[in-house]
Image (cartoon, rainbow, N blue to C red; front, side, top):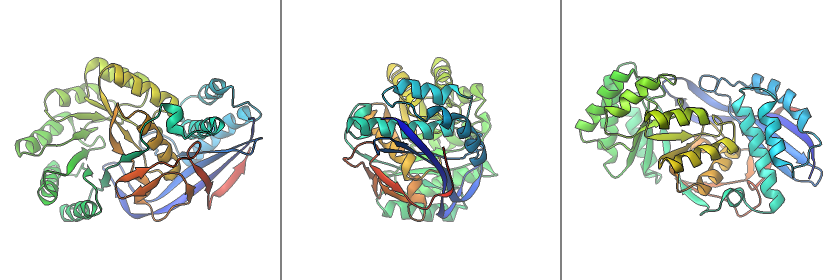
Length: 366
């Protein structure tokens, strides 16, 4: 199975409602899609989300990086899989989201080569998982309304975006949601680096004292403030989840060594793909830690890959945050995972199970 052609294009999908966090407001998904074709007629699909404020990647930078990597992959044999991964990672530094897209497409082809779904190639499991759904940062009344609508759709885990200009609004909004949905609904807070360490402790302790039992608080402080993250973890009972602070295997090792967070958010875009995500999951297993499997603002290609990963590492991945495709108006993907409310079901088909992607823009070929 030789790599014959690599095609790249943009996928654009409007969102149902604006996606608001402490870092940005987005009204449409615009991601990079890769199709790697082989001489045997197989196609592997990958996707990269340009999240400049978190990963530093943009559509333009990813296309420029692909122009360096793609020619080195053409003509290579998929049986030399580790050599292909080395080309992806050693051709240039950084560009993790593009590398993730290339890895997803290569792993898709690898699983097709063996005639099995990707989760079976990665270790097996039960191909059905349950995700939370994100509640965007808004005024309190809107957030309560959005939370109740999500619960009505069957979601029993809500990821609440916080980071309002006044920290008291974060406390009030969370309390309002908790009282509206009831204690049986799991609440996760995501601050996206919005708080100082002391603010984070003040807010989390206020919620703890009010009887709110949070599943976790994600990235309460700046990504590079390891000491601040450790301070929050040491002074609260609520589990603290590292996201932007955990961008590599090295970062995760540091977090475990310093006990600066309780949980790790694995995202394929941050980790430059599946191979390093596997390393993080194995580290978490050895340190007896649990992880979240999360996503950026992604469509059904990379989220299908993430779901396969979550299934294969279910002993480590205890929190699922793969709601990206649900936030979009429609889909351009044929095949792949099926989403029914909070439930994600993987197809019994080789690889990712994706057969086509419609409506790509600005298409280039290598």
